[in-house]
Image (cartoon, rainbow, N blue to C red; front, side, top):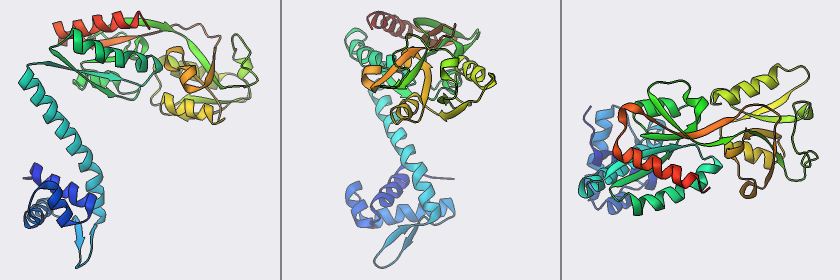
Length: 298
């Protein structure tokens, strides 16, 4: 298949505007050039992307599905070109950091980017979030150079270096004013017959999955729903859908406007930064040391 970037640009722009003339102006091309690119693309794909009439252009069902995928592909491609050009021109080392939107990361990452600009002039940092089930695999595949995660997510993996930055525990997250909000600590029995919010079992880190299974296997009636992200769980708590059980470093109670009470559960959670030993470099080590310095002040 012989697709080219301009064909895809023309397709995405026409799919957004549903007007060949408007798309041509936006792309600084002639209308016949846009039409030719679309026709060549349809020939390569062996299916029609647009229905054309005298007064209207619309996407076919196949064209609609193709547009959903191609818009993201173009964005990522253009960003990759920009990033690579900047590295080429400035001879910078590019490091990709994966994060999960935990509260502690929202405090750390802006400081890291600002500090790196001044202290690590030859390093370019880029950030991308990942869901809790894909961090280690993305690190091993080179999607990230380092990830912010918990030790239990990494496990006893000889390929990975884990640098601890913070210790936490499990908290019960409640709406402000909940009848349990005045407790200093909450036990399993305190939560009996209450609606709980767990992580999706397919995405939960090992310690979270173990804790959730402890609740599920306990005698008595259990009511729970699942959430795919920390933010979703917090939104559910705010909306009165239940009580979430989350790591202490995952939630900022002031920002989220919820209450956090420690759960009586004897597990310490190690949070830190992880990277592959085989890909260690002076720039990566410098970034890790900067993260350690910044975390000590949070």
